[in-house]
Length: 291
Image 1 (tube, helix red, strand yellow):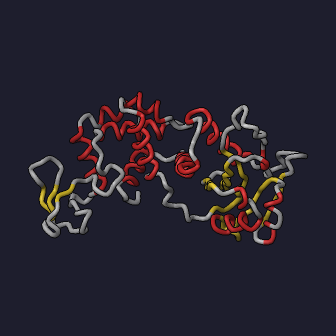
Image 2 (spheres, rainbow, N blue to C red):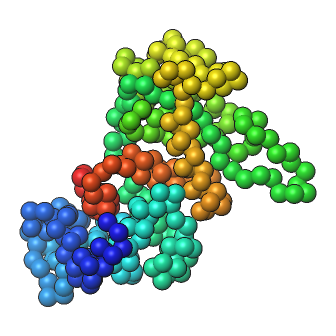
Image 3 (cartoon, one colour):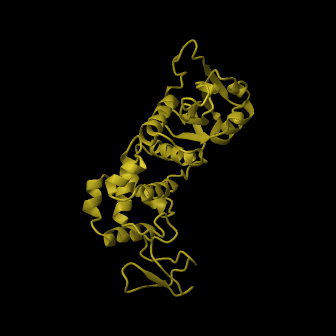
């Protein structure tokens, strides 16, 4: 859904609230978010309800990513549309200009939306041909700092390990440099991959040595060749390209503290790239409902 559709379908705050109620309470019975009772009474104030069980009042936004917001819901919907439609994401300052809020509000709003993007299917195991690789996120040392800029595995940047199923989902995770070991990488494979129904493809990094003991394993020696039949890591490399273009081109800098949330967002967009209505699905997730 694009921003033109947002303006047409949700021109007022009441339209936004009505839509959220229809999604959260599809059976038409508002349920108290505090005690889960459906013994409620609508209040004269638009789209608020009173719980006859715990004697509290509530609206549809309680307990959701929209809770305690003083921002018009139409702007929330616009921000959601802009973020979902931006293949390489959108910076907070750009979002702030687009929906006419300050940069801090835009950042807070975007981080709330990212909470709805945590993949509820995270535990589903990858299968088929799965490519695994690692990349490094971070900038070059400042001039005059005395630090030497190293590339690849000798860098001081933050490592991110990813696995992608050919034609399927991708999973990526921030880890520490000292965890790039065979033991840690093998544990990640066991946690995310169906060992009996999968062929793993990696590069020649020593951390992947011994993977053949737990899974069918093909190695691509990038010093010699990049593709041999269906043996390659081009799919995961393509995902890294999207991730890095987003971070370098849009954000320029991302703190390690929040890096995992940005990675979750890119995984979410990638994994649902063919979904018919990603806007509706994300709204449902934001309302803590399984879509």
